[in-house]
Image 1 (cartoon, rainbow, N blue to C red):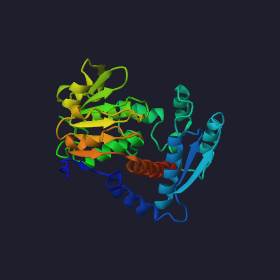
Image 2 (image 1 turned 120 degrees about the horizontal axis):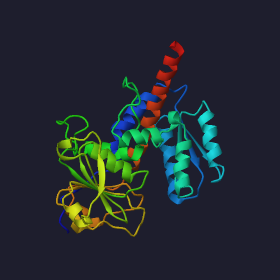
Image 3 (image 1 turned 60 degrees about the vertical axis):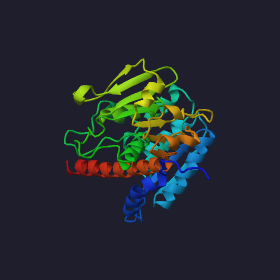
Image 4 (image 1 turned 90 degrees about the horizontal axis):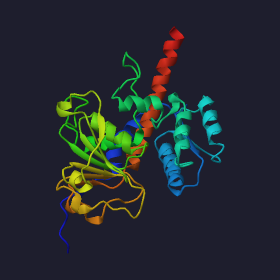
Length: 317
């Protein structure tokens, strides 16, 4: 019989439960008019199709209404605008990739700010990069965060990587993180988000490694990003957290690079860590999908609440 590994696997369902319970409590009071999410699928990518099915099942189980609208790539922009104008729709989710290039970034911006549950609108992304946490000076409306990076933040909070004794916004001070992915959807926003919370983040892609940080003593309000000549091995061996998101079944993060006791999280639909990851890692989260969906639906409810506040203010004026 093989020796038991020191590290533990933490499942996303366990982390998500707190948030799904809160969602059910809220939607149970909205039975006559449940929040409605529309998913727009303009491709036949297997991962997107699976995600769409998973989204629908999760929504219905938590008291949300879900409608999947399928169309051609060419018709997707028009379908987004139709959903924007549909008052029965409270949130819109577009399943990417569609064209797999900059046209996808354009399509993200077609989604109304008031219905963008993924938090990918330029206003939200710009605020996140500049470490601006509210949409208004009165601080009544929080700026949404992209749901997958936000899910990883919530996972790190659950795993006690964030230090609650430090000031809010500085709670990753002293932590080093390696993120293997620099996509505009997840990897780069995640690196910025973690750096804005005080971490030193090594952002890795196929071309180079960039270092995201707020400087010595966190003297900067927002992060800076510079290319760093450090190797993946050197970055990983000093990292308290290693996060992977490589969409390839062939990619495996080298176990020997993992610092003893590090936290390892995989957000790719593929398994990026080898089976022996827990020989080095203290905590291992193999997937995050259930937490991501919970964050997406929390964003939807927040949008509904903020939109109601805006309508009330407009009516009074």
